[in-house]
Length: 309
Image (cartoon, rainbow, N blue to C red; front, side, top):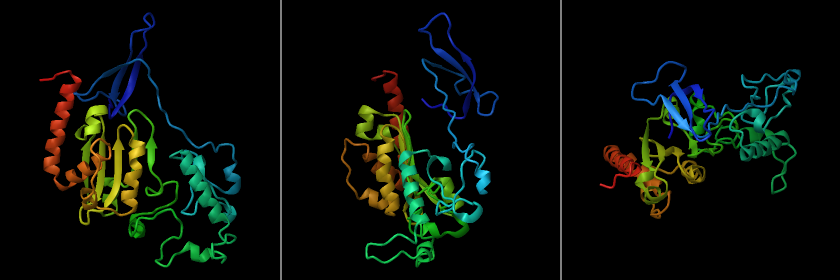
C-alpha cells in the first residue's frame, strides 16, 4: 500500500510486547492534518526511512578547480560531461553527478567522458582520425554527443535541453528496486506539456492482464504519447518486474513507435508485456478503459477481502 502526500508525525514503538506492531502517526506532507478520508496511522513490523543520498564531493576541493557544485554537492556538467571549471579540462561521471546513482549509468557516463576527453586521439574503424569539431556538431546541426537519440525531439531549442547523461530522460531507464518496483523511461505528461506537445496517456492495471490477475494484481503501466502522431514519448511502470519491463518500453520510445504499432503486435497472454497492448487500447478508448479499470479495481477489492460472491 502506498500513502501519497503524507509524512510521519510520531512513532509509537511497543516496549513490553515484541509482537505488537509499530504505529506511525501520519500527517499531510509539509505538516498539518490529512483529509478526512485519508489514513491517519500505519501499523507495521518494520519501518525503514529512505532519506536519499547525495554526492560525496565535500573533500574534493572543487573550488580549487573553479567548480561550483549544485545544492546537493553534485558536479554540474554539459552534454559532453564537461564541468564548468578553470581551464575547461575537468570531466565528471558517476555518483558525483547526483541521481540516479546507478552503476550502469555511471559506467556509461565514464565511457562517454573518456571519449570526449580524447576525441582527437580516437581513431575510427577506417583508420581516419576523428575530427573533434565534426564530432561536436553533426550535419543536422545538433550536438554530436550520444546523449539524446529521439529524432527531432532533441532539436526543440529552448523548449528542451538534453544536458547530459546525468539528466537526459532518453539516456537511460530509471529503476527503483523497491516493493513494488518502479521504473520509467522518456517523458512524463507534464514534461510533454512544457515542450509544447499535446500528450495523452494510456493506462493498464496489472489486474487487467492474466499474469497480473493471478500472480501480482497490484500495479500499473502507463504509456505517454503524442496525440497528434500517436508516437510514444514515455513509459512509466509501478509493480512487479517493473525494472525488467521498462526495457521494452525504452525500445518503443527510442524506435519512435506509435500506439498503433503496439496495437498491431501480438503479446503472449500469460506475460506482463500484455499490459503494453492494454495500455495502447486505453489510449484509443479512454472512456471504455476507465470503465474496465473501475471494474478490475472493484474485483480486486472483493478478492482482497475474501468476498467470492
